[in-house]
Length: 275
Image (cartoon, rainbow, N blue to C red; front, side):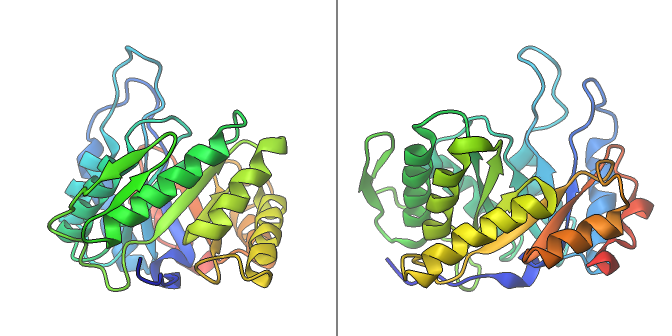
């Protein structure tokens, strides 16, 4: 497998995260998302992230995340494009890698692949390890083959291949905390390009420590893994600028900042300067 490269450009600094609409708020989703993407392009924001739908079964959902991301790929010019996985198993990793390849081709090399890391049970770390291995293989190998306990692929040729220089970055979005969090951080530190964590400065500090341990031991196959914080726009009680500063001082490479629906572009205008 080819050597991987860290992708700080586009993943560093501020990323704009379009928080999911409330249940039933489906009007104008594409137009509003496109407006936010245009603002992100113009304002110097490095990446744009849409949310997986987390609505209860049977409820109306506002969009399918990667369909929306594909539409935004032709309505933006510069920002990296990713999905904030919500901790729910949705797609086989080989299928996910193929979908993200399509986004990367359509956007001329701006796709980001995100896997969820849910700290729910003891098998999550094993599942994440295999999912990362399969995704990487499908994205970079000509004839990817892998046999794991949970996932496997056999000559899963991915054409057309991604076009991004250095390859599509793979990001792990962590959910939850407690004892289940550290094994997932350990796996991400070894195999991912970046990890997104909640918990403000404390969450970032824990992730940076886990990544550094792997790097210092020479066990991180990518050398250095970027750590990104994630802040809900309305959850920064002490002020967004202070919250971002805290995440940065804790060692984060960047920070995803939530923009509540209806995704008012004016509210995103000055976000890049908070970093």
